[in-house]
Length: 117
Length: 109
Image (tube, rainbow over all chains, first blue to last red; front, side, top):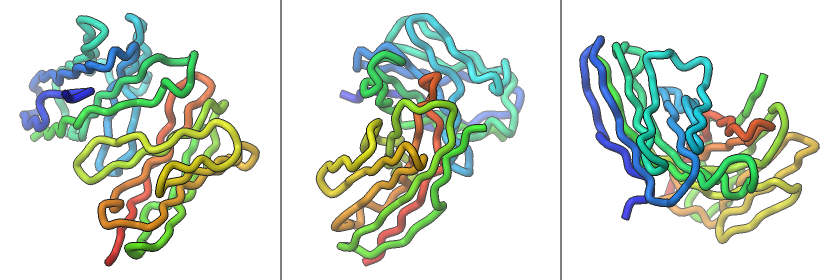
């Protein structure tokens, strides 16, 4: 069983479209994350979501919105896609944040390669 | 600002030893992580250090000096499958992970 799964693995779309990426974790973790990894390989945190508390990286455009139907899922919705949104998007989860540091080890999904044409 | 520095690329020979350095400047410190990322795949957890010293785990060891803002990952008995990027990440005072750009390690036969 895959611990953290994402769909789709590849997504090619036109500028201006709206798309969603789904993420599910079966680890029973409390916190989930979305990262963007650009061509220079920097991993940039976009959101973390813990027990309905959303922490947003203020540099993320409001075209990006996370949606969490339950603790095991954190989906990423992107409106009005732009060329610069092309990147690999990783979902990750960790047991909890802030209390026991070791449990903050993050487990990553396989990534979604988004290409905006 | 917060900053994590690692060499961009390193080359080593199969069977040898390589040390990948990481220096950091962050607002607070709640531990340092090393992740391995093969091309086209997700990062996978390797090690965690929060106290000074060396943590050994099989062929991989990780060292931390908090006073110097410095860590290294030591890989012994290198194998071809160790060719990957190695990411250093520091958890700051807000429990946010600050990531380095990664070091691409190339192993030659």
